Length: 220
Image (tube, rainbow, N blue to C red):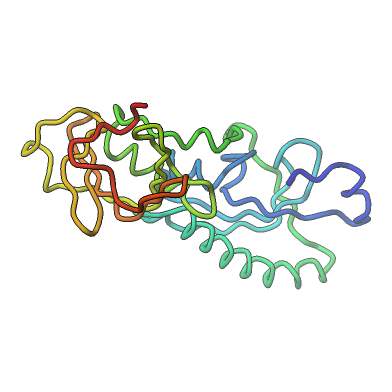
C-alpha cells in the first residue's frame, strides 16, 4: 500500500516501510511477480524511510538473497517474510540508538515495476516454455494464477515444470496437449518445448479432469 502524507505525518521521527525488492530497483507495484518474470537471480528486502515519491526514501537496512530457479510467488513471499523478521530485529536497536542509517538511494539505478491485474495471467502459448513457466510461478498463490481456456472454460494452472520427454518426439502446435495421465498433462509451447502441468483447476464448477489429448488450449 502507498502511505500518503497524513499517515506519515503521524510518525514525528519518520515512518518506515518494507519493499520486497533491492531498492532502488523495482520500485512500485507487484515486485514479487516481477522478480520472477524478469528472471532476477538475486533480490533483497528493503527497509526504507517513507518519503514523497514511490519507494524513493533513504534506506534504513537491506538484506540480499538468491532467487531459486524454480522460485514461486509463495516461496518468494515466504523468503521475504523471513528477511523482514531479521531486518526488524536489527532495526530496533538502531532506532533506539537515535542514529539509524538513512542511506540515499542512487537514482541512476532506479527502475519501476508497473501495476499488474488478474488479466495479466493469461498464457500466450506461442512464447517459450521457460517464459510460460515463469508466468505460472510468478502469479500462482497467493495471486489469482496463470490461466488459459478450452471450449469456453477457463483453466487455471497452479503448478507446472519443464517436460524434456516431449520436444522433438511430438509434432504439435503451441497450446496443444501432447500427453496426459493421472498426474497431469503436457502442453506444447512456442519454442517446441513442453510444460508438464502438475496442478490445475477449472474456474467453473464441473469436471476435474484435464483437457483431452490433442486439445488446443487458448482457443475458444
